[in-house]
Image (cartoon, rainbow, N blue to C red; front, side, top):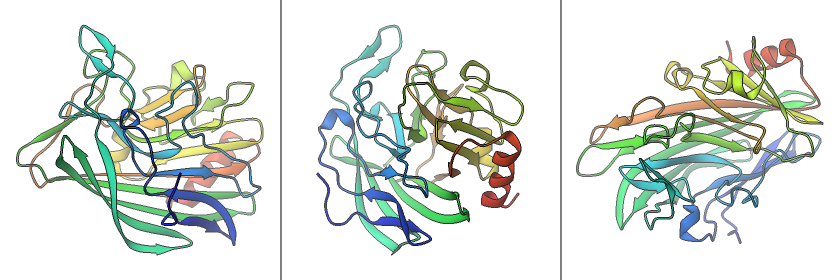
Length: 281
């Protein structure tokens, strides 16, 4: 269930995404605002919400599996030398207010709360812009400020002992189809080869759609890509890959990811051209 306080993004007058601010979800899913459904300009859905394989995957949003031991990702927690375990340690992202809101985007304030304590305060900026008659760009920036009384650190299953599982940060759960989507970068292809890379952009292509993800700041481009296609279709960033990401009291971590949402398959040259148009480089 959603509230009426859920803006619809529009591009060229067409609805392309809904931002759900206050979803009614069980605690183990780490409730948080998300974008779903997100569609191409032709109306093809390119997100999924709570799929059976991972009920805690919620469209497009920001999620971190370990904030000082609290799970803001949902599902089980990976514990070193024990593996994934069900724990009562889930946090929640709570929408506070909109600082700006119009059909082309919004600026929202969020509170990241766990065990009755606010740990992080987030400013999330989302903008939608037309690129061509068949492609548009979703520009998402999140700024996480440590408002706790002491230092915080962000972790992932990888930093807790599970190799290759450095997910956490921006995450897009894509549309599941009969065939796994193709994934490629400017100079490589396939899940095994592009997962963990720091490519300027990364494309995920289904039967009738293509998503092209690009880090739009130097800090964002330093984060490796987290990619899954065989088990499920999803792409995200890795805030904590080889080591935990420390945030001192009052400090802020900022990341910006721009995603091209296109109808039809894109070639490498077409994907790169749309990224240049969307990001301005």
